[in-house]
Image (cartoon, rainbow, N blue to C red):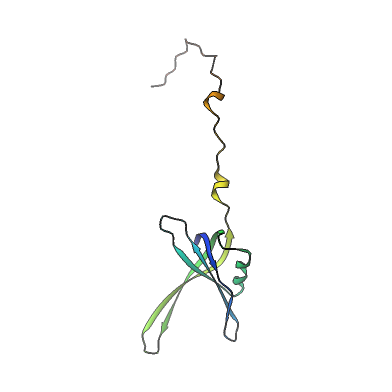
Length: 125
């Protein structure tokens, strides 16, 4: 799966526990009719992938959805979801890739002079 949008926030790398588990979060805002602010976490060695990106940059992030079950001390079962990124790449601004060349004005074309009045076309209009 993937998410495309503009980087709104890049968090600092956080380290947890004695084993040195690392996590870094990024928020990507989608560009659609109703923009969504998607929190994506990168873990362990993937945290370094965010070093080359900055706020405002257009990106595509490959993600995995993760879910886990947790039973609290009162015995109630809770479920949690997370979005984990494993790849991120910069996107070019679309306007620079799809820009059409300007159309010349109508006066720039010379009229056709080689028409033969005796030729009949079979076009229905």
